Image (tube, rainbow, N blue to C red; front, top):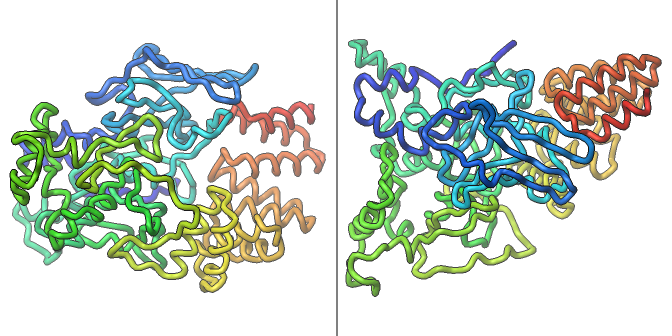
Length: 512
């Protein structure tokens, strides 16, 4: 198998020999503990509130069995068990989990929430009445939780036996690849390349990009067109992606939206770029809970005078100006409000006529904006935003495969099959992603080219075996072609990934 290289260079263990004290302190921070094999690390879940019910009648029950965490799922007469192989999240707010099945990672439908000390549905599952066992863990989900992510090239959620080389955010996640630095420290001659990145010494835009790579999700993030290798510490995040936010919305209550909130604060605006995350936070150290009021008050008093606040001397500045707030995107989770308001403002409901706009410092083309609207339109079935995306993406050059694939999906949903199929054909020859392959297979089937469809669907399932649309299409084609045994084998293979699939089970019954 071909593996896409992760971002690991020298590796964090090399840093310990010269930076032992920093390494010890950092090892206890949430960033360092943000992923790993379930059961490792300092955080421990409780199992006293470990049963979850869904509106569709299904249930999930989490338990610790022989040192391993697993969950039992039941939906009607169907039931089973799955292990929680990897955790994502240090436990500060909570943790989500991933299950590995034949080299592919899937998000567990159940997560642990620290404040209420309970298990509940994972983020994004709340409005689904049925249990979803096949939500793929894509590389973008891991990039801010792990270091050296090892993906299988061409797949959506295929990984090496060890999906990441380091659990948590390693030293190189913020300081850049350390190979050159280690070589110089061992007596090697400098090559002229940057030895190591110290975020605090970078110009404002590059400095803020180090934190923004994980703390600026916006409404949607779009990779820029062209040969961009992706963000590396020391560069500008805006060179590799465009982050779009909701225009006219004062703040986004996302769990990791700190950079967006901070940028809108009077403190940040009046500092002329001097105030940044490192002004108050030391990434290498976690401030003990009992020390936090005094610690952050001291930070505030570097710019503000005590007499300017009506609160009693020695009070907790953050309690009034940075209170905890319910996260809009994650149930059962709270976040620290970073807009540093003079008074607490209730989270307003979002207006109906929302627009997307690039976050300050980012420049988005019509292509980027079209992709942003299309991504949300397809995800949320938003027809109005789909039409906006269509208008923008039809102007993008045909060789832009990312834009073309989204345009084809929009045509598909509008019933404009001929236009969609023409684009799928072109994109397949340039960038054959699993979704494009499956859709092109459907186009070939509509033309009566069944053998071509079968070959396409088989190739797509090798790259993304949990894609039920492709699997069901393949089984139907095999059965109608007279190969019932092949159809049954295709369907049974799908039950390894989703034993609750009523469509697969019904088709099996129909064939038998």
